[in-house]
Length: 107
Length: 119
Image (cartoon, rainbow over all chains, first blue to last red; front, side, top):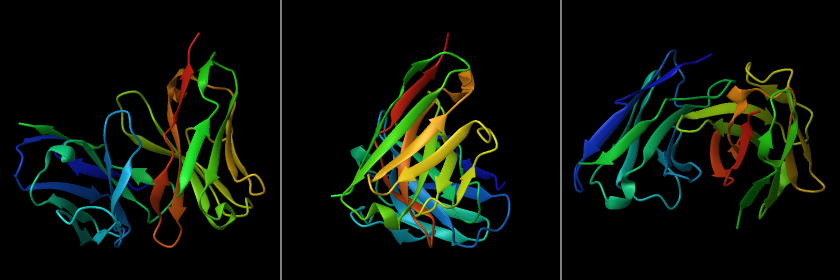
């Protein structure tokens, strides 16, 4: 199975900050990397697919990059509604695996 | 509008069974592969199972293999997860999700249904 490791596990930031979350795969997954946002009590929401493609309707302050084993999710200017937990997920092989999550909290 | 609505969760004793359903609408259900993903209380997302568009191919996480069965009824636009021999560690919110096959991302998720395994 491919292991996905996110860092940091939690992060405190302020509105307006630029934030970067990283995700590392245990083997190369090309660009088969997706990012989701989850708020408490809600289902995950797709933000970025194929490492860098922005899902329709997602604000342009979200961006993704990377290929192979190392990936990043960047939020260019944090908004109050962005405080949530973020997960990466590989879709290169089965079983699909997720990172452990990064909890983004208000400083 | 794409909608996925799960049902069938609840409290069940260890060793018991439960069948989850996921009713799909707003898209051509029979054209899409579907997955189940679960999330234990306070924990992260864990992939459980997937089924192809016509139901002829399935796959399972090792943790549920031999105990869970995924199926679908394309005439009823419904996805199922039959869960047998349930254990305490199966306690979680179960989400169904639609997948874009070529790239493999989950573009729509249901609201989730809670399964609690406890005596």
